[in-house]
Length: 235
Ligand SMILES: [Zn+2]
Image 1 (cartoon, rainbow, N blue to C red):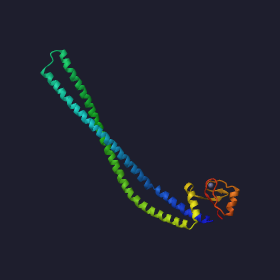
Image 2 (cartoon, protein in one colour):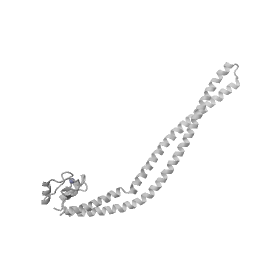
Image 3 (spheres, rainbow, N blue to C red):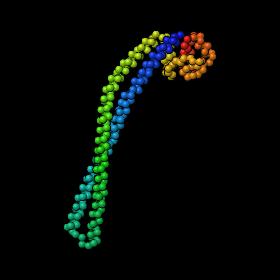
Image 4 (cartoon, rainbow, N blue to C red):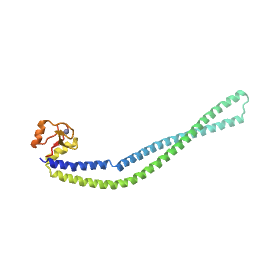
């Protein structure tokens, strides 16, 4: 049995795992991810606004054209009235009715146009704000990315060294044992647990006395019935 060696191997193996987790959880990395998401969000907001602005520009043009057309109609009507002034109150009413209607429509259009101008200003402001904050975040991102790349390069080189060391240690151990270790590690880590007061120190389950006897013999690999870890008994 090479459990002492396997236990020592586990220490370096776990150290390498912890280091790898630390790289992944790096504060800089988390911040960069956040900034990248923010920039992507802003790009989406910008696209949405651009779509709205384009739709508004179309509507603005249509209303303006229609308004111009009605304006011309109105001028024609008033010109006509000046040329042929109404002869009676009834005639005056009859001539005024379409004029009144045109003026009402035109005033509605005018209101819509002024609302659209205000909306356009608001969207301009929103676009400006988005551009400013996205540019600021991008600058921060670029600066941090530079730092992070240096850190990441250094850390991954270090991790590679650690992994090379664990591989070298693993090569010294029985291949079957290492295979068992790795298989257990897939679902339970760390994959070994010390026996403390007759309990598995991984899950605190008491081991049956038959198992404890087998463990004393030291002839076979003993796994915890409950968590599946390799039970290690220090001599
Ligand atoms: Zn256990």
